[in-house]
Image 1 (cartoon, rainbow, N blue to C red):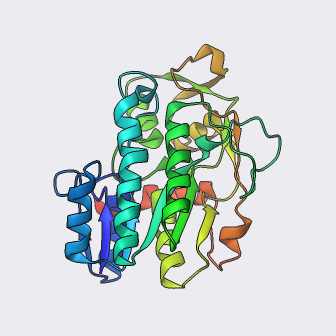
Image 2 (cartoon, rainbow, N blue to C red):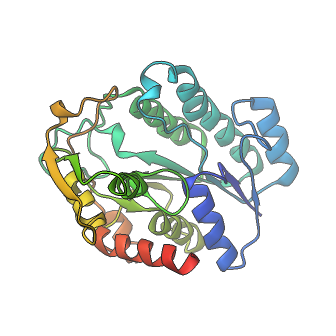
Length: 281
């Protein structure tokens, strides 16, 4: 039996869609069915269904709110909740897949961040997700930790939808051009999660995003290339945000590729994503 936490979120919904296509049975939960911040309730729930595998997609991802009014819930979900899920998973002998982030890095590295690169989160969100990683490593004997970045997909709010929405009402958009990273399509990430677990890959830490990298400005330009909207590059200083964003968070994908998983480029992923939306409409 497979258990999905955060099953109604952006990644959780994509994962459910993929498992449905492959006729794989699972139990889907969100905070209404399973409050992961309640340790006793989490253990009871997981002991009752006894999953062999838990895809832990539940997370607090409001990066800017995590700096102030969301600081407590950020830690409660991303650290305490992850600890509760990890402990319950270990009790029933379940393998655990935990999703982390490029925000565990400070973004000052000129090259790619490899798996063993020094972490140095500069935001509350990044610090909580790194603590979540350490909790999983400490507790779980069968865990995959997947760091990802710049996530977009069909379900939930993300950069692609934001750009498309703004393009409907603005002839000109300004987008940050001095932050560089790898976009990640939720479909690619979900497929990699299933690939790791279904092919019995080695437990441990992985980086997974789409191939190649870009700035947010270049990402926006690709998203809106079929429109007449003008896109102008700006600096991070011209677009201040509460939470620190890594300026150069390009993560090395060689370990993920060594598993035999084929990773599309982010440009290919954007095209496939748009096609999937058209097919669903």
